[in-house]
Image (tube, rainbow, N blue to C red; front, side):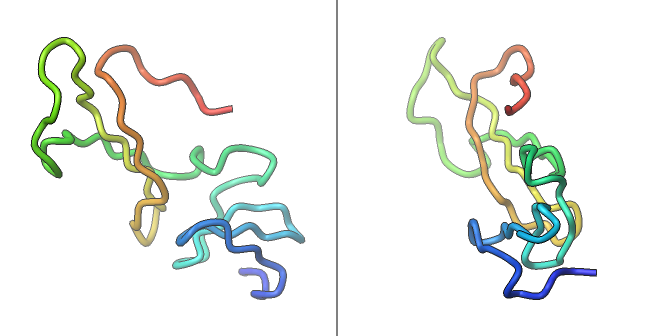
Length: 95
């Protein structure tokens, strides 16, 4: 059961913090994304996309950012955050 709105703090357009239970929540679907003492991204889906799907490349050559990582809520699907990074080893876990 979701907390009453007065117990929530709006953090971003789609992300709330339940102050009583110390949980991250999607404010669209109410899905819990994990402990507020941890990174909310751990409760999100990660969708690797080619940035060229959104915008043509502005930089060519070796310095080519080529992965877009939208973090999505598991149920309702809006992106909480998108990060852009170079291809290569997996990103380090967020602390």
